[in-house]
Length: 404
Image 1 (tube, helix red, strand yellow):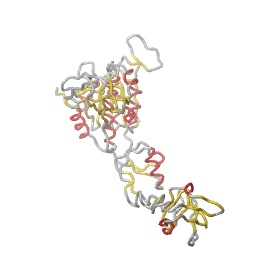
Image 2 (cartoon, one colour):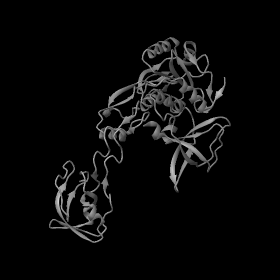
Image 3 (cartoon, helix red, strand yellow):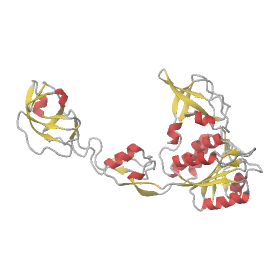
Image 4 (cartoon, one colour):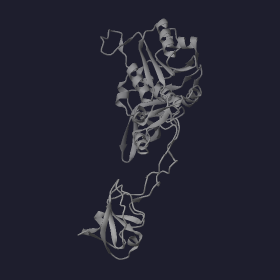
């Protein structure tokens, strides 16, 4: 069976996916959703020319004055309450942050730069420059401009921006429904007695939270025994509700790997594996047109292969513009063990030292122990043909950006 690169596998996986249609949702419920269309600003931003400071509005003549001036305060403009009168020569108005700036005003001088006494302010010569502390209507966005672009995953800041534009709803991709089937006779539900020869199931909870962090709605089928009939019945139920199916365990092609056998007999499994560590047994295929991942049973391998492949597939189905893990550059703090032709996804730590970002893999890289994941804040991604020595540049994937 051929072994391909990470990038080759990603390209094949994406080619088998379909983008989900859009739906309108309230802005208040849109965080983490992916925009299905551009959001055009319905208003200018700022909506009107306003003051960026608490202070006093100055006319053009006052701004250009080469000598100190004394100005009588003739009124005030407050946020939400514009000044509606007029001024004469030698006058100014008090103005607060966010208040509308009158047409005659050329600048705003902060109150701390003037002396005020008995309703009169004194300002130094040349105290303000034209346009100082004024936010012009439409200088950030013009009505009709794209405020948020299609494929963007909406953050808290994006939600606030949409609300500031007066938008009640946005069009986002439908939420993909993901059926999760974790298999294995050796697995025991956390909280239950764990007999000798059994282990507690970590993959169900880990994968469910990862699915949800990628915008999916997880249909958790619980622990499925290593029984072809039980697994087949679970697959039948999953097919009736799913946009994507994820199995954990049984990825290899042996007599005991029922996940592989069932998908192969009922659908199509891609005829390759990915030359990587951990996670080489991962398989991808389709069942009645539904994409299927068979992730390894080892918890770390399941965790890593989800982040490197299944997470991207979920985001691609939602039309996201950025689907694969974002990477930054760091300095390797030590040699990293590699094998020619094999990609390494080492669990490790990032730290700042002397203005540099240093990456160091954990001593243990066991694919069966989640201790390494819990102790890590990054995945160090070493390419198929890379050899990494201490001091070399290495690509890293901060875990915070993958798990939000």
